[in-house]
Image (cartoon, rainbow, N blue to C red; front, side, top):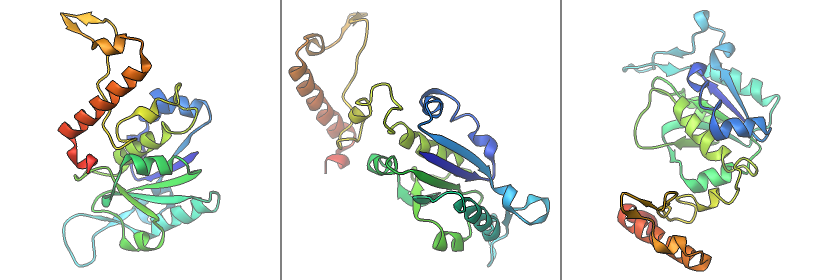
Length: 224
C-alpha cells in the first residue's frame, strides 16, 4: 500500500512513521508513506498557501490553487483509490472504516490547517472526509498519523501475529476483554483461574462474556 500525505508542516510527521509497527511495515515493503510539502506546489511569493477568507472573519483558509496543483501533479503518477481530507466535520473514523481502507492500494491524505481548505477543493477532488473525533486540532497532521496507523497495522504481514488485529476492540462491535500476563500472582492479585486452565473453549467463552460485560459498562451505544 502507498499512502501520500499532503501537508503544510511536514516536520510534524517525521516521527510517527519511524518507530514500532509502522516502521516494520515500511521495512517489509508492505507500506510506503510519503510526506509531501504543499509549499512545493504554490506559485505565490514566499511559498504562500493560505489567505484571508472571502466575506471576512477570523483565521486563514488554505488556497485552492496550491492544493489543486499538488493533487493533479500527484495524480499523474498515482491512481488514488481515495483522496481523503482530514477535517473535524468529516465522518468519524471507526474500525469498520479502517478495515475497508486497509484493502486499498493507494491513498492520498490532505491535512487541513488554519480554518480549513477552500470548499472548491472539497467539491471537486475529495472522495472521503474523515474526523478522528469531535474536537479541533491545529492541523490534520496528527489525524493523518492516527489514520495511517489504524490502516497500516491491518495490512497482512505487518503484525507478527495476523490474528492479533482480529481480537482488537471494535472488530466485532465489542470492546476487548481484560488481558493478563506474568506473574500469575502479584501482591496477592491473582489471574483468573480460567486463563490458567488450558481449556481453550472455556477461555474463549470467558473472554466473550467479559467483552460483552465490558462493552455494556463502558460503551452501551455499540451494543445498540
